[in-house]
Each structure stands twice: as structure tokens, then as C-alpha cells.
Length: 244
Image (cartoon, rainbow, N blue to C red):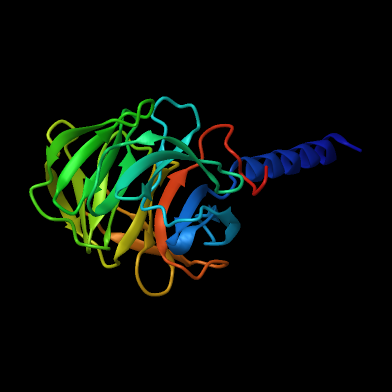
């Protein structure tokens, strides 16, 4: 093999390595009626790993970087903070938040975990004790059943109806960013891009512009018929396949 042939083979090897490095972005996904799985955010393909036994209204990544995924589960009249076993979707209880009422959304930033209720109240949840602290009020009532919070970004965003807001995590106030064309039921930030999954109609994925709220269609969802209830980025070392 001459020098040119060696160089060509090396170049092909580099291209293959680069392609492997630029893998499709993945996220954990929770759906209505409890299905939990892993979704390819480019193709919309879902691998259902199991069922959590309840609909999880939002997912949150651990701000400490531990890789833990949190959710709130209704137990009797109150909400319990739980962790989600990401290979299977099963839940482990941490403790009661003491919160009651209509939970509309749950999400996180890189510094905290937050819950939103139909009253407009915003709470920060302690991931060790499960205790809830009132942060403040959004300044408007969330759009019932069409509301969700983001996770894994420095800032906290919510989709309410067809509008994107940024939430002040000091006082809870929501500031409108702009309108969306789709009703978003889940948000997560992966590879510097905010993704949204629809809450009504046929399941679809969008990217969401954090400057003006505009959404761009990515793909229809394949492998799951129920609407999105939560999305969460997969942390470093997190399971990327069901059961693994």
C-alpha cells in the first residue's frame, strides 16, 4: 500500500470515528399512563423500558450531577418525591413533599428542582429530604393539562398552552418569551438545544427557540402512542439502553 492509499484509509477511519462521536441525541421520556423509555431526539424512535405504574407529570435531572432522575408521584392526597430507575422505569420513594392539589409541571435547572401547581404557585423541592419551599407565584394560572417545565438548563422554562415562558427561580415570576405553534407537554435541554414533545394529538418532537419561543418540527414519534408527560436529558454515565 502506497502513501496515498494509506492516507485515504486513515481519512476514512477518521470519518467513521467522527460519525460515531456525533451520535443522535437521546433522552429519557415519560408518557401518559406510565410508560417510560428512551427516545432518539432526531428520529423520534422510542424504546419502552417499562411502566412506572403511574403517569409522571414531568421529570427532573439531579442538579448535583449524580445522574439521578426525579419525579413526583401522587400517593393518596399528597405528592411524594421519587427517583426513577432509568433502565426499567420503576420508582423508589424518597419522601413526602407535603404538597397537595393539582400538579401541572415538574422540572429542574442546573441548580434546583421545581414543581408548579394549578394555583400558579412555584415550589423548590429538596432532593434529599423531599421538603418543598414556596418560591413565589408565576403571575398567571398554568394552562391546565397543557403545561410542562424544562430541565438540564441554567434557566427554567415552562410551556403553558402554546406559549413559552422563562421563570425567575428567586421569586417564581414567569416572563413570556413568545408563542409556539404546538402544545408542548415535555421539555428537555440536550446538546445546547431545547426539545419539546407534544401533549395532544399525534406524538411529535420539536426544537424550541429559547429567544422567541418558535418551534420547529423534528419528527413524529415511533413506538409509543400516548402523549408526552416528561423528558429528561441522559446524564453522563446514565443508561442509554433499556435494562442497561
